[in-house]
Every structure is written in C-alpha cells, then in structure tokens.
Image (cartoon, rainbow, N blue to C red; front, side, top):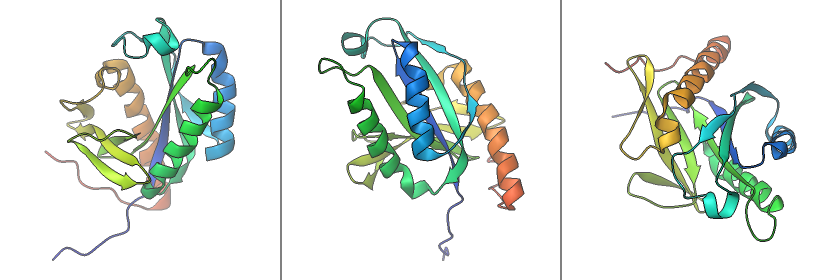
Length: 184
C-alpha cells in the first residue's frame, strides 16, 4: 500500500506572449507583486508556431518566460491561473487581449501548465482549471509529448527550462528535499 506523502514545492514559471514587447515590464512588475521576486528571465523568443493568436494579438508575437524565486505548493496552480487571467483581462484593449499569460510549475521530473480548457490528457484541479502535463524530464532533457505546444517543444524554450530546473535543483538541495530518481 502506498503511503500519501506531501508533495515537494514547485518552481513557478510563467510565460508571457505578446505582440507589444513594451507591455512586458508592466506585466512582469504585476506578476512579481503577486508571486514574489523573479530570478530567471528568458530572452525574447519569436512565436511563429501557429496563427491561433494572430486575430486577437497580431501577427508578430514573441514569448518571454519568467521563473520566480519563491517556491509554491503545487495545489496553488488554479489560484495562480485565475490571477493571471485577471491580469490578461486588465490589459485588454477594444475587447482583445494584448498579452497571453501561461502559468505553470516545474518539478525535477516534469513541467505542467495550467489551462482553462479540458482535454483527454488534462487533469481537473478545481475552480475551472486543468493541469496540462507539457514536458517530462528524461535522459538529461525535457521531452515533449504528443500534445505539447510547439513552442514548449522547441529547443530554445526547453533549454531555458533546463536552466530553471538546475536552479530549482539547487534550491531543493538547500531545503534538503530529495527528488525522485530519474527514470531510465
């Protein structure tokens, strides 16, 4: 019989997608006010993987990803997603979003994004929010799954998440919180 164990704290990671990079400093400041200090920021990554957001946010989109210093409890993800949805709504102009904010968390073994949309591979967390298993860490790298969003499956974003994972591993070691053995 398995014995319930408390989950390890997770590294909060939030992606910001926009066609107007000038919005980023204000968004980052609001995210930092809500979730604590930011310790790692990705470079701007061009987003040309889909035209899904083009009508609403324009054709020339870029993503920047932030990792936060305070570790979070995994069950906070629905509250984080609700807060980022409110931040998106607050930045709308003429009924259209100008930023898309994707919160998630990173553990040594996986990367999970929050979503308000159900799908076969998503697990309901409560409050209208689902957990989307986006990447798994195997053989020294984050590996995409058949449903992984193309930008998260691409090398630049995965390399960034590997750097975040290294920092997170050091933070766990400082807390003396062991992680699982890497699957073979």
